[in-house]
Image 1 (spheres, rainbow, N blue to C red):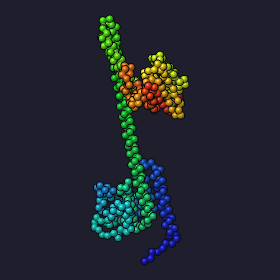
Image 2: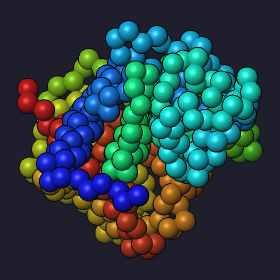
Image 3: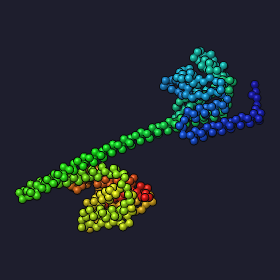
Image 4: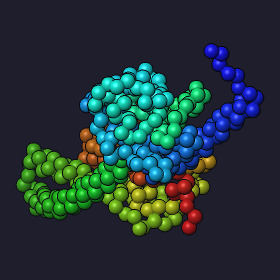
Amino acid sequence: MKKPTLSQLEKDQIIERQVRFQELLISISTTYINSDLTDIDQLINRSLKQIGEFVESDRSYIFSYDLENNTTSNTYEWCSEGITPEIENLQNIPVDFIPQWLEAHRAGKAFFVEDVSELPEDGEQGLRAILEPQGIKSLITIPKIKNNELIGFIGFDSVRQINKYNDNEKEILFVYANMLVNVIQRKEQEAKIKEQEAKKEELLQHLSKQNEALNDYAHMVSHDLKAPLIGIHTLIGWFLEDHKERLNEGQMQTMNEVLYHVEKMDSLIKGILDYSTVGLMESENSWVDTNQLMTEILQTTMVPDAVDIQIQEDLPKLYGNTWRFKQLFQNLLQNALKYCDKEESRVTVCYTDKADAYEFFVEDNGRGINPIYFDRIFKIFTKLDNTASSSGIGLSIVKKIVTYYQGEIWLESEEGKGTTFYFSLPKEVVAKEG
């Protein structure tokens, strides 16, 4: 029998329906994209209603597959007025009851039954026996596939009449199924991100409390250790003063070695105190004239006669804690002086005004640093020699202060020729308007 041809009007109606279907899908997609997905259930239910009404179905729904346990469950459902919901009755349904459409879904195809009454009589657990009690006359189900894995399907039941779907409509329903997979996946990713951010915030708070406790502990221990050291140093000084005429050279050397180690311990404790105090002063910020600060530092620093110190005259004013900036420049200056070994030594302090930061450098022409120490030199207790004046903490304090102000620090050095320490301080942090 020859298939009847469609009139031009019928063709135009089909094309117009497909255009409206595509426009509906675009509208739903735009809603998904612009939504923050805080109420994803409402979004999905609304789209099920929109699509269901358009294809003139009486019930539209989403099922998830649990292929480990070989079951499927109804997770979302929309019913037209007067149609009984079935979602409560369709939980953990064995997939053995629906082998035909599971096979189709695994092949990435739609499962379509145009007329349920024409299905074979295949027993109480057959497909027809499942569908007819729900009043279903025809249905179509579209697989949901995520990362090449079958995770569920969407479906449309027709209860009041037989419903047909052409190939173009099936393709559009496949697009809708993919949209649902994407929006659910996006929701899962957002949930994971929020969970990770919550864990990160919790970890940061925990670390902050730990650091505060450690700093407080270091401050307390260091402070308590200084008192007996001062007592030991004083007692030894008195003893040497009272008995210097009766002590021989060996005894004097022994007592001086004791003083040396006491001074070394005092330097170490002072370094720990300074290091633990870097992050503890929050309310003492003000504008600091860097040139005036350098003048004050030089007044309290022992500078050998052979060393020429050059300070740039127009160093910038910085906004922050005076003690921190003093520790920063003082430790770098003292480090440079410590390794000056030339008859004509030179230490230079300058800066460059960058677009978004002040870039300082402290340069010397001393003995230089072996490159193997570049990565280690800012770590606490790392030092290049073993002297009472060197605690191995000075550069770690410098690093901690620069990091506190969100800056960076690095160095260039050549053994025998000198070293230059560079550090940058972001203007948004240290050049705020007062």
